[in-house]
Image (cartoon, rainbow, N blue to C red):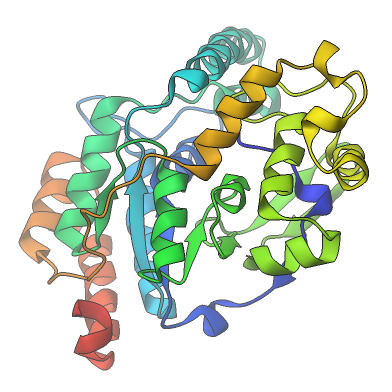
Length: 338
């Protein structure tokens, strides 16, 4: 879910052409959840192989990664490790929502309300451990670098961007900004349009760049104050203050500088909790044990895994592999394998 500070964040439209040649550290769990939610049949069921294994995430991961490489990007997928203790309550809350959504999905499906069924099915998405291992296996065969974070993937991606080992963190959420990533790129693992039923509109998804320095300067705040704004709104590690959205939080922090100075705030939020959440964003658990260089493609392994084990079309998979090879043959070896 992440922190919702979209209303005070400045986004700049970009294109895949402008992002060509960039290494982007992608939040792997974020991307896999997207694929699992979106790639479904008319009834809301995910794709499965003949053994009953869900393959929606593999389909999205494989073909989208092929597209990114063709665009000239070098994706680096960062996987979550152990969640901070403070996130366990949020994880439990999400689990409850998914369980409730599953019941609503089954009821809607039984009553023939397919559009509602698909919506509830997406909300009921669960990322199983075998799906994560399948994703890592596929990426390794593709030669695409994977990084195992000790804790939060977005914190690790931000750390790599701060060090300059990648150009930006890539995620639909805004947490990487609070973790200090100098840039965040959105909408690169998604395609098509996002629909807003309440507004009756559909907006085409295009890549966006968020520059942390520009966000801070435009709002006349520091990164520490941006974190305080996030805490007031609510993060994965705290509930926030009821009735305070990003614009109100910005107003309060600009006026009082930090949460503790806001009159009467101690009655609405646990100040000890505030310090704990700050520490998560300012001093996250990260690692230097990673390699962001591309490796040679193992074509036989990709075909064996996707086609013979997971029932993918061999013709389509081989065609996609050829596209990668053609692109990489035109790129500098120093860029992709250095």
